[in-house]
Structure formats: structure tokens, C-alpha cells
Image (tube, rainbow, N blue to C red; front, side, top):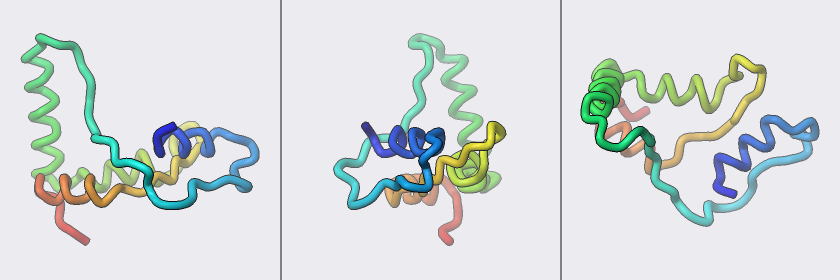
Amino acid sequence: MPFSYLNGFIATNEDAQDMKVAGDYLSYDPYGLAYRRNDPAFAAVVERAFARMAEERRLTELYDKWFLSRLPVGETMNLPMSPQLEEIFRALGTPSE
């Protein structure tokens, strides 16, 4: 299972206090979004949304909201941002911390 699947499993498991993802990453998987092929209008919406979030410097805030904080359903993914994604966000305009 990729790293995020493991964290999702732990977040929803009753015995979560007894589990954690340990050790180094075995691989680095690319981040991405999937949407319908041949839909340039929707692709443009996604690109504009990411550009706006980067310009407003909200990428890290939104990542933290959905992957580090308690979700509306009560679970916490506790999935820290990878160094690779931090670099991508930095390149898009998010200040390094």
C-alpha cells in the first residue's frame, strides 16, 4: 500500500493508537489529479484554481487542513507533506517556513 493508504487505514482503525507508519519511504509517488480526458474547460478551471491558491499562498494551509487536522468525519490522516511536495508548493509561490 502507498504511504497515504496506510495513514488512511490507521485513521479509520479502532486500534490506531497501536499503529504507526515507520521507517524511510520505500518510494516517492507523484502527486496528481485525475479528471476526464478531452475536457479543456475543466482542465483550465483546475489550473486557475491551483494558480489562485498558490498566489494567495494557501496551498500549505489547505494541505494541513485535509491531511494533518481532524477531518469533518472526526478522523485525522496525520500525513505530513513530503519534501518533494513542499518544493513544488514553494516553486508555485508558497513561502518556505
